[in-house]
Amino acid sequence: MKRKGDKVDGWVILDKPVGLGSTPAVGKVRRLFGAQKAGHGGTLDPLASGVLPIALGEATKTVPFVMDGRKEYRFTLRFGEARSTEDLEGEVTATSDVRPADQAIRAVLPRFVGTIQQMPPAFSALKIDGKRAYDLARAGEAVDLKPRPVSIERLELMGRPDAGHADFVVSCGKGTYIRSLGRDLALALGTVGHLSFLRRTAAGPFREEAAISLSKLEALGHIPALLGALAPVETALDDIPALALTEAQADRLRQGQPVLLTRDVPPSGALLRAEAGSKLVALVRSDGVALKPVRVFNL
Image (tube, rainbow, N blue to C red):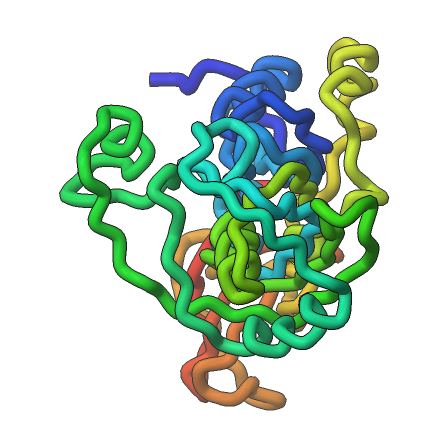
């Protein structure tokens, strides 16, 4: 049975607006392009804005590499009010009159850099016994989540709009919840808090400078104008070394067969981007003798 939609392959670096969920955002972009397949490179909360990489067609095969990439955010922490969702959406659950000084904030930041244990928010997309945590939380059921190790590379205080707010930038790894980070920062400072602003500025190789708004995509109208907003499939694989192959070798990979190399064999276990005539063919892994296809692209 023929799949509904057109063959459109590439990445849309969407500048997601506040108020739109990640899944509805993917649906809107997929419909605009008339694409057969679509997915995203990492959930962004409805109340967050910024970089939501959306994969169309063959780019969906590269989604895990964006998911595993570093993320960067700007966020504002509001002191004095804890909320059920750790952001503006939830109900106030605790209050405090403590408003920490800049020096106190800077003194606790090193505790949150490196590999740390983090308790995810109850209102999160994590699954507990097959059910989403946020569905259980909204139903008033107890949400039993466990702390998880997350990696934070950089956390800096950027400014203080007033005594009740602090602006930060953070660079972190997969699975880090910025809402939880804000909550824990406030607690470490002897107060409570929640995020009043959150914006993702980078996800893997995709940065906000290259992002396009939904309204601009809609203004472009239809193919072919929209195709100018597509980044190539291989953009998500920028960190993976490329290896040039002959067309005959590329055909073997396309058929799911290994390619034997007689010289310059990459070390066993190495992941490579196989290309023929500058066209992406497959992701391959070396076993020290041959290249075996991991993901084959139909481009």
